[in-house]
Image 1: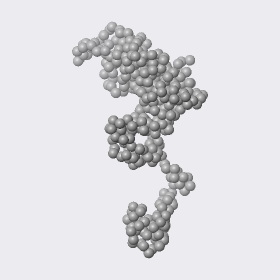
Image 2: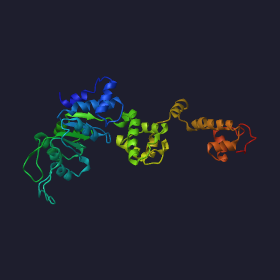
Image 3: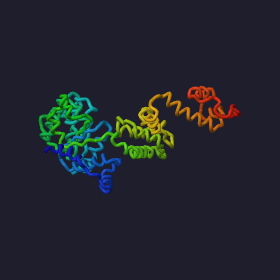
Image 4: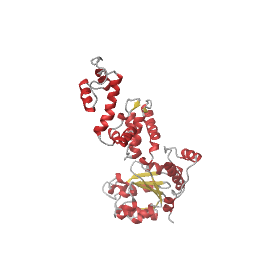
Amino acid sequence: MRLYEENKASGQGRRDLTLSERERLRRRFPEFIGNTETLFFLLQDLERISSSEAPVLIQGESGTGKELVARAIHRISPRRSGPFVGENCAAMAPHLLEDELFGHEKGAFTGARGERAGLVESSHGGILFLDEITETRSDFQSKLLRVIQEKEIRRLGSNRPRSVDFRLITATHRDPEQEVEAGTFREDLRYRIDVLRLHLPPLRQRRQDIPLLCQFFLGIYCRRLKKPTPRILTDAMTVLIGARWRGNIRELQNEMERIANQSNAIIHADHLSPSLQQQGIPHPIALKLRAEVGTDLRKLEKIVLGGIVRDVLRETDGNKAQAARILGIPKTTLYRRLDRYGVMRSFGSQSHDDTI
């Protein structure tokens, strides 16, 4: 059985982690924040494969921390004394990526005034991390396949092979099998890089970790700004926990940086980005009302807002001017609302109607 298949199967039938095992993993991987079993199972897999020399493929959505995982593998691996060299393949033009990885000799192309070692050579004795590997072109994939198989490179403009010793870690936000079927990724290269695979869960599968992540990032940015860490109230945290987080942890981190640069000591829901406020999960009262009353907005408005108006009028003994002030609306608006909600204008005493 191939090693990556064993790795996939290892997640099946796992037992709950003991408290001591969780604490041990926290101590060994302090850069990972969270309490969910999903995270701890990932850390167990990460620990298990770190001592191997086999290539690792990290699969996960954008912003889930693929480079953080790669660096953690390097930190606890036998190659930790060697370099960690990383490159985002999607961030470079195809013709520049080849030179960046393989290097060149003097005169290899216009402007090549001297020789230059590429990233593969620079990773000798350590780990080479290639993010978004599925975004590369077929010709580059062919050359990378040769490097992996032969453990040697040829700089651009040179026929002399150079031996290299590195462990390869790649990452992608795509499904490698689908990319092979679509003809955009070489199947033979997929076999070479997909020996051990780690799948990083999106943040929406780790919602219980969001409060811890918020406090962690908010604390970092506030310390940099030399200011107290604001308190996130329940209404704001409810929105944060219920948001989609399409950008995952990176998006959450950006939101905490934005909050840290505000002057608010207490964070309410309306202090969050508008896009997050629109994604907030429904309030429990709203869920209950919908279940009991349905989705007729006029009916809901009459029950909820009409009930509030009645309560305020009762508290003010029918004083409509005072009730309007408490409700934060003009008295003329209150009269229109009374008609709209079916509340009698003669509700309560009329003796203090114009008293504020």
